[in-house]
Image (cartoon, rainbow, N blue to C red):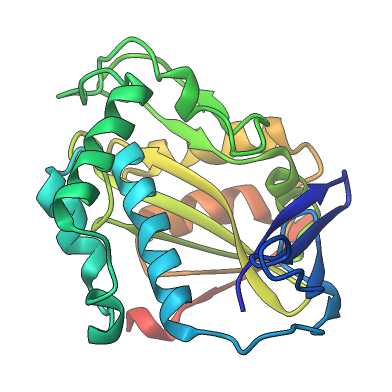
Length: 261
């Protein structure tokens, strides 16, 4: 079944069945404010769920997201969103001319500047610095220059980082904008789930860059002091985290990830 937001408070989000109005369906769920925990569920639906409808909804959401946040061609947006879509869902999609027109209209509405070609661009568009709930997401930008570091995280995610005992860190390159070297992600273990909490665009993988990242995060989260840190076997990142967290007065335990062996 598919749900849409009915209302949200500081600590809870209320969801209603997508057919609440049309079919008077009473299906409801409540989640925590980060939508990571199911608090309440009323599965009193008055119709049978439709997997194909859910596929189509997810396809449309992906199209809107890529149209808004990527510089892909219109056709590339559609092709990427069609990946893994079932044949039953494909035949029920709107006409592709209509989908293309929606993509172009959405991009026109966003009025985003041209994608920068290097790290010396002046400013990040305001609409890319907040979450969908209009809370701050851009936490740090070192400014135009070749050594630029940009850190994205919500206030709730920073709180999870500051209070975490188990920290997992890793860099990725596949989804990194071409003008940066890597997207460095920090995850925490929270209530037996692994949650991403920080996304940092880094210009390289030097020890000095990792130290700058750690120092800035320590400013944002003064009480940040994980007990366990898991990462790959990159020497520069190991040294930077070890110098910060595995001192004689702060004996954090560091370990390598078997996935990277």
